[in-house]
Length: 554
Image 1 (spheres, rainbow, N blue to C red):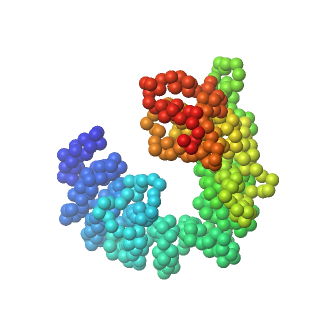
Image 2 (tube, one colour; image 1 turned 45 degrees about the vertical axis):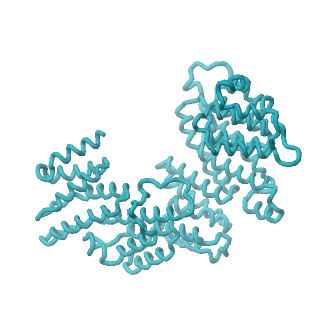
């Protein structure tokens, strides 16, 4: 409301008539940054719509273009550029050496690429999450991503940018890389080839970002099982490694990880990461840790768990202090007995939590490996291929590796979070193991229970063959989560019951004596018996108490 009021005040001041050019420039930038794009556009138009236009500074009109890009107003961006072009031509006719800055032109190209990405994503059969404001297309926008990319490539042709928008120079390397990056994301190989051809015609040399886009496209469109010698991805990576003027960045390494691992060239990966550690590790610790996390995620998604473990123990673990944080630093008076790790709040413990993601990624990789190896529907041939696919040694048990990593995490003073808990729940083989982990998560780790954790608990109990504990868990969820219990929650619960109804002898529910009910009795504030006694007042648990003693099939 205050921003809107400020916009109304600015409009009433008639700055185009009563303020200097310097003041108007500042207002254009300030209103654009604050989201008052209409006021910013109006003031700019008034500055330019005179016989001798006063062109604002690069910072001012670039701020406006960035604001329009974030709101997805490509048409308005083009209108602003055309207004600026007319003003620049008018000033140039008077002998001034002036023109549109290339940064503004690149901002417009980036906006077109944003629209192309959004069009591509919206054309896919299913989306997992809604588009951001930056990606959202206008309701009247009917262009396909190919049409957007064609428009962007046309602007790269020699002389077009100068003729249309009166730019000071032709497209630079960032202009080409912007379109290459977008085209690689949408797998538009023909567009990439056109852009590379234009770069060759204009004598523009590619940089590491150019190669990143090309490697990304090759990795998305090349069969990972193709001959290594003919693999386009490997060939591009080799070009980067052989070029003395190209310094691979973290994104280059991330793209090269899986191809090089599967080509048996692990030593080259280690050399690349060592170089990354040298020029990033000392200057920006957070960036380096994020890079290592990204590397682990890439390898785990490709089921290269063994090499992910090697990187973890070689680069991540040495960064973690051997001695855990001292709870006395934050809790001067400590009661008898060990202090729960979830209650330790020190500067060191907060720094250590930045490693939680690294542990979680590798633990989740082991969980996925265990799930594949324990799938009874996999035939012998698939199991052999799967063993090679998972890249685990014969002596390695994914469950044991995950448990060892989990305990190492705690020993080093890193408190598990909800994601760690759900992954570890999926690795348990007994109902008592699930219950014990649930109890530790509540008492020791102080983890806030969420629907996702409850879903993982019910799924684990169901797979293990303890639907009674799944029922008791669902009751706890109903009692504590309220409106967060959704249709998916009911589906998970019913799925757990269905696991107990298979075969000719379905499991008979004994909810009150289940492993979860007994193991969590002292942890949960309201006991199941107490809830059962209040069924007349609260219909929430009526269904659950009604099915106690029935078999799962019924």
